[in-house]
Image 1 (cartoon, rainbow, N blue to C red):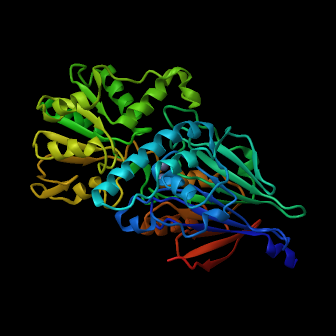
Image 2: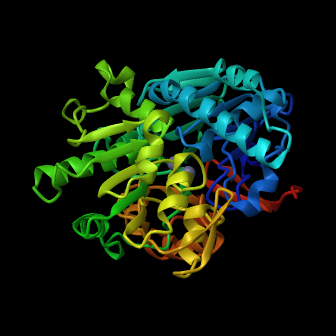
Length: 476
Ligand SMILES: [Zn+2]
Ligand SMILES: [Zn+2]
């Protein structure tokens, strides 16, 4: 059946590491007269310093894309959508309804951050405000669990995902009359649960399909049991000695989760309600207000989780920031950005890093080259550069993965094991060594027909029965 060989998709990842998520899929239909169908899944900003060089351009022609799918509202998955528009993309961007509601906040914020960065470097800005409006005008919100036809031959279903409010696993079904379907499942970033939303099990109709899963692997080298919760203990140690805790948090998800964590600590009598809690970050405060707003603007937040504020909480704005920055009294400050490199976090860290009584506690992943990662490697007493200021590192700096919004290796293995006819797992969204380690483990413990690692140097040709072959790309 020579014909069968002519129905396939080529899957490529534009991101060699964790950030800059963007998978390009090129569909080849059996009919020679049908043009190829091209789409991308996610369009993220590269945040690792070494990958910054990829930010300005795409390795494909955006004008040739038929549609774009978005898994969730994190900058490393959506930050280059305005650039896509700027480069001539003018077709629909499909995502969940909740992500559609959140996208304006994140894209406008990303635009502002990039504007500040380009000013500082006197470089040309990647995109303009009209590109943000342009990209937003293309976004279409889809309901969870309902199949949407996005092209004559392509159907997509967004499935719930605990990684983030609005996040989805995207099931893509590619059809052609007389041929078996090609089934792809993009995990985006994945987690099985979330305190704010309900996460449904994978429907059986999808679990038993011959399927290819494009799987993230951020923590593919770590098991759940290796993560020992330390946040509560660390901050209490600092508070009991009268110090200040600076906790960089991601605006969406982590901020709200840590606020809830502090509320639970107060309720359990661990944390005294006299200790003031400050929350500084414009975008984070906007997101937080959405969580509590009436009906939560279609975000799907559980009713019982709409009241998650700790007592003695103050939202910081410009008028009081200076006093919070300079006060030496005992307090907890949650601030953005989560990796420390942008936003008010820089100002707090540059002040409090010099103080022995301070604790800087990162609450999530810190990509290579970000302030969070640099502080990890800086010895006590050494000079560190924070947002253009050089300061001596005297504060205690701690990290925890306990709040991670990513499944660890063991959870991902269990996730993959539920698929009964798994043809191919393509690993992406991980550091290279992690992807390789994790691939070995999937071969051993899940044993799909094939396992591949996505990267910029080659792509994978997939047909209804799994992997056909790998080919090298022409990208640099
Ligand atoms: Zn994410
Ligand atoms: Zn991600």
